[in-house]
Image (cartoon, rainbow, N blue to C red; front, top):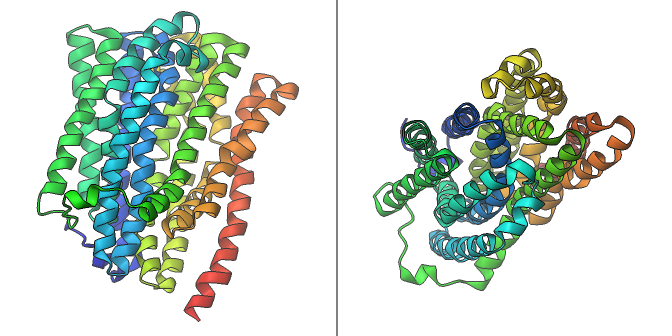
Length: 450
C-alpha cells in the first residue's frame, strides 16, 4: 500500500480515500481485537474462568489511564489535520510536541495514583471474592506499562492524522501479535499464570512504543520537532484538552459502565454473570472492528477538508462513511444473532457460563446495524474541532441513556433489564445524533457550499 501524504486527503476521490484510510485502520483494530479475544481464550483455557473475570475487573482502570494517551492523541490530531489542511505546519509541529509532553505527564501521574490505591480500586471495580487476588496481580503489572501504552495510543492517532494509515496499522499489529506470542511463552511454556498474562500485554506495548519512536525519527514522518516544541503552549493545550476531553470522557464512561455493570451483575448472578459480561465485552471490541475502522479512517479526511474549507468533500465523506459502516454493521449483526453459542464456547467450557451468555449476547448486539451513524456523527464534530456537541453526543449512548436504564429496567425485568439497556440506549443515542448531524449539514456545510 502506497504512502498517503497529508495533501492527498484533500484531492483523492472520497470513496477511494476512505477505503485507503479505513482498511488499514480496520485491519489494525481487527488484529488488536483478535489479540484481546485470543488472549481471553488463552487465559480462560490455561488459567481458568475466574481469570477472565479478573482481567475484566482490571480493564476499566487500565482503559481509563491508557485513554489519556488516546485523548491527547485524538484531540491533537484534530488540530494537526486541520492545520495541515490550512497549510499551517508550524502549528502542527507545536501541537505534536505538546502532545508528547502532556502524554507522559498525565500517564505517569495516574499510574502512580493507581498503584497507590490498588487495594481500594480493585474491589470497587467488582474484584471481590475469588476474583480479588488474580485481579491484583494483573493490575499491578499492567500499570507499570501505562506510560508506554499512553504514548502508543497518542502516536498512533498522530500517524493517521499525517495521512499514513499503513504505519498506524503496523503500530496496532505489533502489540497484538507480540502479546499472543508472549502469552504462549509466559503462560503456557513458563507457567507464570496471571503474572505471565500481564507481562505479555505490557511487553507487547513496549515493542510497539519502539516502533512508533522509530517512525517519528525516520523520514516517514512529516512532523520533525525540536526541543522548543515540547514547551507547553496555553492555547494549544486548551484546544487539545477540549477536544481530547471528548475521548477521555468516552473512555471514562466506559470504565464507569464496566464498574457499574460488573457490580450489578455480581449481585444478580455472581461470578458467572460477570464472566458472561466479560465475554460479551470482548465480542463488542472484536465484532465492531470494521465500523470502528471506518470511523477512524473518516476522522482525518473530515478534519483535513474542513480545515481546507472543502465542505462538499466533508459532506461526501460523512454520507459515504455512514453507508459503508451501516452495511458492515448489518453483516456483524447477522453473525452474532446466529452463532452466539459457538462464540461463547471459544472462551470457556464452564457450562454455567455457556448457558447464560448467548441470550445476553443477542440482547447486547440487537441494535448494532444503526450504531454506525451514532459513532460517525459524534466523530464528525470532534474531527472539525467542535468539542461541545462532540462531547454531548459521545455521552448520550452510555452516560445519558445506558446507565439510567440499567438501574431502572432491572426493577421490572431483573438481570435481563441490564442486557435490554444495551439496544435501547443504542437506538435513543442514534436518534439524537441523527438530529444534530442533519442540522449541522443543513446549516453549516450546505450553506458554506452555496
